[in-house]
Length: 500
Image (tube, rainbow, N blue to C red):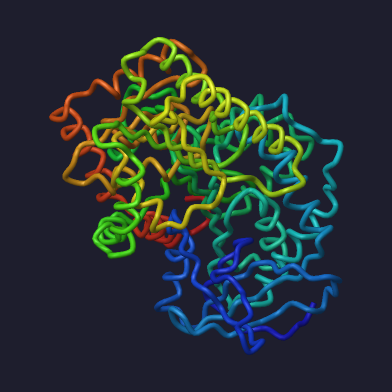
């Protein structure tokens, strides 16, 4: 790896680049904005607005890896910063990301241990990729710099950074759930992972339950001492959800250091969504949806991706039971299922997609009328402007994963429905369930609870819809994606990293 480096006081480690790389008609490289539905990429980019000497570290795919070929690019938007990209071969990406991260870690993080497969995992490649991210951060960092590491595929980067550069402050944010200790302990590398996270000055999770799960794992597996519990922040619902926690551990003590724990759910961009609804291209999408939906029919939207954790099959079976039971709803409701296909080559996701398609096809074959098809089904990646149009038109948003770290679609729907009705049916096993007071919470493992929830949503009167939606819209406007980023950085700056 090249020793040429800048001296940046702020480094961000995220496997995704801040922009998409493309080639224009002249054969020259251009950078395209990522109009990410969850707004995380633009928000993280905005951290560099007042940091002209910051650095973002990501990967790039190359045909042949030369470890001396890190690419350093001076970006100029939103202000000047360095993009450093680490070269990974297709084999390294498949091993590090698709196999070890997605086939080994993902099922454990989401509490699906029966899907856990350790046999294909190549821990040495995972370590090597993490080392390369860490070394790049150390080369770029000025004395006393701040490094913000994102997500479980960079679990080991903090320990490698701290060993080489103890002067650096490290924050880590976990974008997925963190499971109970008995499930997490299935991972053969559990101690190394925990020790690495305890090398940080701040470790952040979406909600207090995940924070507590991590605190317990750190206490049980490596003996970290837990600070006295505190009441959770008022933005979290105190009772009701399966993931509710009334109190939370604020910090851990380990190896002479104190590690701040933060429960900070990623927000969305409500003003962006509300402004988009007024834009001509979104209005055109809304009109197209109107044309395809007979007047008076109730439109139900479910948006996710193909993944066994997302509960798409359970939701479709609930819809089938609803149509079998309620003949009066035939021709009166339509379910739009936007279920983005997973990356090719991952057998478990291919099997899940095949099952979803078979159930949806069976329902349409069984119940369709001359002028009514009960399910519209799309596996394409719907552009964000079009998705906002679906939010604006959907009478019900049906989000019932079996497990989900947060679920920003639920928050985006609440933002889009400001000042109007609409019903959110939400799994109590999503992080968002402890944030959106007004949703109909349901248990996706229970046929009875799922059946009751969708019937309640269909029957809910307009005044109750508006009351509930007002509460949820206020919640997403009060704590946006910018508030999330600010809270993480402010918490890090307050921490000295030393025991008092």
